[in-house]
Image 1 (cartoon, helix red, strand yellow):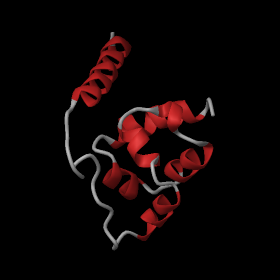
Image 2: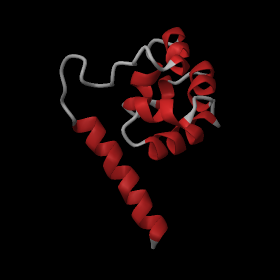
Image 3: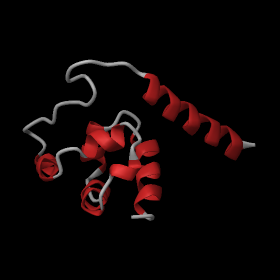
Image 4: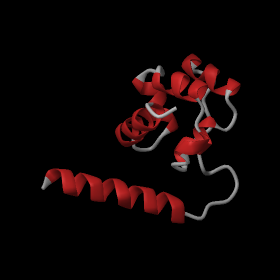
Length: 96
């Protein structure tokens, strides 16, 4: 029963992220210069944006490597629900 509820929650999160209409730079937080672990993000320009919008087909192997090796505080700074994004990214990166 818990697996079914978890899968429903993941599906709802994906659907909500697809239907959210935003404009400007309110899609992802702006990295703070005080977090040096985010410097690698500059080498892969659309990586965070693709993961944020659940477009895992656009995520490259380099993107996977950099995002999955980020410390938890940096990963949590980039994504609103870090555990869900980390789980989905980990699953998607196994296929790249």
